[in-house]
Image (cartoon, rainbow, N blue to C red; front, side, top):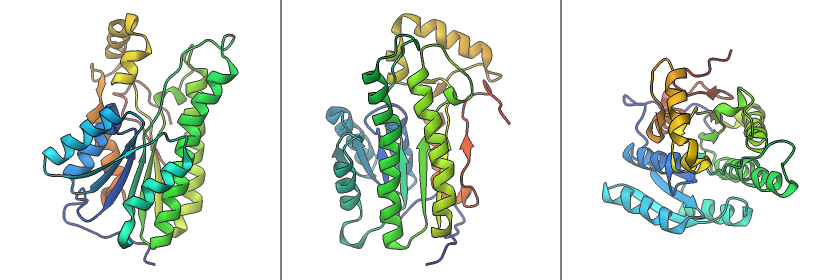
Length: 264
């Protein structure tokens, strides 16, 4: 197996490659599915929101792209395995996996219930872990270098009241990313994370609709770019990490956050 990715005069082109995107029914996941498809990838879209998932697939195919729907919950590893098997049927390869599915929960430390923690960890950490495991198995079986992109959060850089469960799960994703990068690198598989700042998506809108305007105004004031992020801003970062443009990057955490946080 060659560990060197193919080179191209257009490094963001993904023609002939197959991608799996979880959380593809809306927000960052949908934007990522659309952008990967526009770059030429055949995109397998996974989400438990069947209506949103169908809409994403329609958007991709309406633009002339290739997309397939896999209604599933990322906490169901057997369903994830079946989606990967479908993506690699008839000798195909899985070249890209973007583990984007996630949920948000707000509660103080004192009021955090065990069932809330279990649910957040199941989706935001174990779902990412299982997606990574199935992707590595498929990429290893085909002997083709691949790229895995996980979704962390700007919450890993600063403590935020009410986000203990969410922040802890996303911090675990960062450590998963770095550990897997060391293990999968010799196989030609790159693993990187994206840690967005405040992004305008359906999930953040549901976070606390009463304070949405105030939160966005505060983020605008904090950002040197004086705006909040959009799902497409994060999707472009995923595209970069999925493509040959980042062929010498692994174990990294990229932060499309408008400069709100600038950690070492």
